[in-house]
Image (cartoon, rainbow, N blue to C red; front, side, top):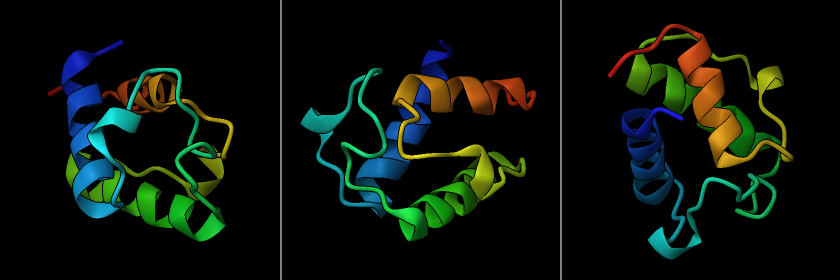
Length: 80
């Protein structure tokens, strides 16, 4: 897992989505962070804005973990 991408996604979650730092871990799911379909769409757009790579909302689901989200972003060729 790319720690730099993890850190940036963690920052997005805490600053834009109100997630508390203590809630973040590689195995936490987006569902555990109380993400519904609208929040997933907003999160996909925030990732696209932050990393400059498109993420379709359909690529994210409530069962995605923070680690699998990082891997999804890294698979798009993002380097930080």
